[in-house]
Amino acid sequence: MTLDGTERPTIYDVANVAGVSHQTVSRVLNCPETVRPANRHRVLAVIVYLGYERNTEAERLGRLHKHTADNAD
Image (cartoon, rainbow, N blue to C red; front, top):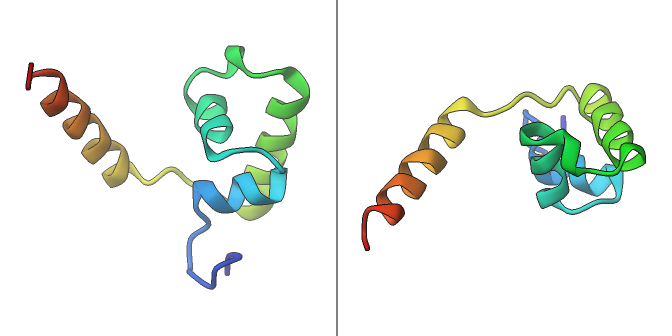
């Protein structure tokens, strides 16, 4: 159970518990070298604590949306 009552913890749940923005959580997952070590370790600990798992369907849709937006020019 997560903070908002759903079954799976979200990136927003991780951010809330870790005390960072959802963008910071995203950076920890996608380009961790850009995040300060203290924040990175805190976010990773919360990910383990909450049992967060990436939503592969949401990632696919995000890539599809970005690809579509890039080709709109």
